[in-house]
Length: 398
Image 1 (cartoon, rainbow, N blue to C red):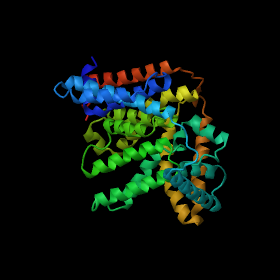
Image 2 (cartoon, one colour):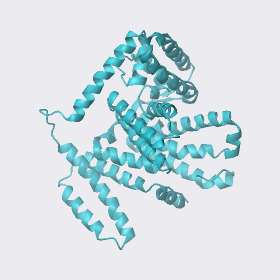
Image 3 (tube, rainbow, N blue to C red):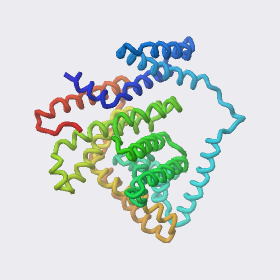
Image 4 (cartoon, one colour):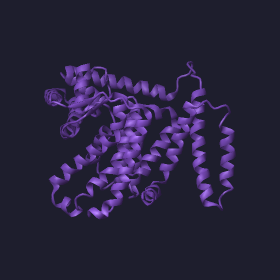
């Protein structure tokens, strides 16, 4: 029943299979002690793959095996590597320099009059410093379903990207504008300490920027798979980072399920009703992202927020305003009182949401197998929806 849909998905995202094989190889090498070195086996397999040019199917299978072995090799090398404490890399020096600059900006923000919980939120949301967040504040954002705005991710980098895109002459000089945006974006990644979720977003937005110049398909499952391959080849241990897992599953779910939500209404109807398009778009993104991260949130934190949709209608616009005003306050400290008022109001609203009965469901303790099976069910549900779309009268996927 699902074979045709699976084939279409894989054909539109050929790198997805390679990314999955790479991930499986990393997992195997991390949990299963390998008695022999993988590199010689990988070398032999690469040679075999080269001689299978006349047999397309066999060569495809051989390529997948190669990526499986690459994942095993990378993780094996990572586990056996020893730290050299006597040498400091250029990247470490660069990161240290930018973190020092971040400290200067944080001091400037505090000296401008933004303090208390408002400072903690601004520091986390704009510059990735969570050290000032109190337990009560963290709990308020967690229960209300707004904790994702405190953890730097694609949301924050996307806001910065959009702001720069609007400020620069992108229509007249698209290549120049994209180059400037990407440079500023990567400088910001260094400024906030290069957390994994931000690096993922930066790589994807870099792909987006380069493809937009050539007028190609910009955001896709294939681009996400490419990002995963690049990042895991750089550091296979990132696979086991919570931020990495949440970030990729959220984006994957958005890429798969947002078109499903959009197809409920006709394109003409959404064009004629802009308010409906905005509201339904926010609903689609919020629910899709929640579908992607819910099993992981239950596994790692044992909690699911029930009012996440209501919260997102508040915190997502607020994030745009807070990030924009944070930059303004750094340039004009006398306007700090406006930012202080905005953040204090946001905190008060989120606190009221947490006071609503049943604002979160706690006590989840799924094991790894249950999490994996949940994702299998989610994926099968997606394939089923795609299969029955014509019967429901929905538009075909783009």
